Image (tube, rainbow, N blue to C red; front, side, top):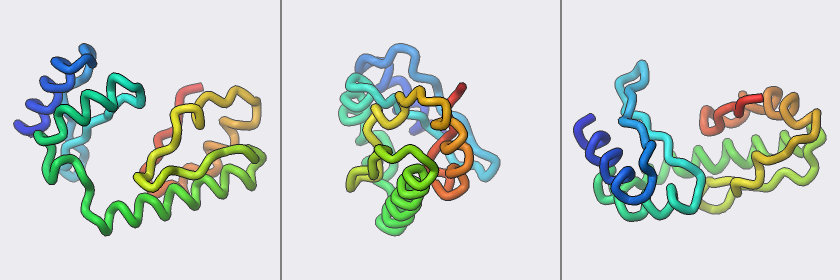
Length: 125
């Protein structure tokens, strides 16, 4: 947790002034939410040395994440969001993936969320 607090302070110093201190999950894992913005990405890059393993997930976790997100993207397309993108090779969707305002987008997102393996959080309405 102490490392997470140092990371949060670093993020604030590097252009994300409202970056929150970390929380712990029910399993005791430290959870940090990195903003999907140019400033958030730049700050994460500057502060990554404060994360365990430099912020990189173990290879097995990366493989599981990418497989889950590819499945989620395919399912979104079969639920009517035909232009929903695949994640990149880092397991990240472009921020534009979440700007869809078509009425069926939220319903598709909710139906597809279980396939995301916990790697996607449902957006607000």
